[in-house]
Amino acid sequence: MTTPYRCPSCKTNRTRFNIIQQVPQSVKLDPASGEVVQNYEQDQIEPFHLAYNGPQLKVQCAACGLVEDEMTFKKFGESTMS
Image (cartoon, rainbow, N blue to C red):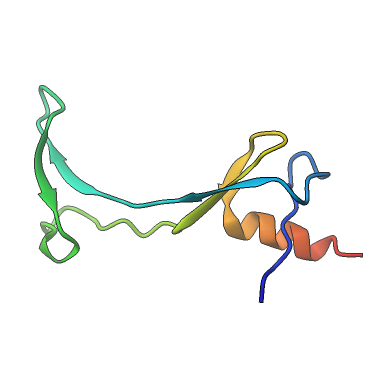
């Protein structure tokens, strides 16, 4: 089942959104140049390198530009249903 969205910032937009799929890439950078020294696979991350644990999706309101976690838009859409 789908859940309606509503923007918590502009409070009027219920229809126009940009869905942003987040694809994390774990890397090790050279501290002097900023170049990528090593790419890590999920099962090969070093002990002091934490794996990404953020949301898979972010949502941007296409009316005001607010970018938040998808759950923020869902919860605001559910709580203001008439």
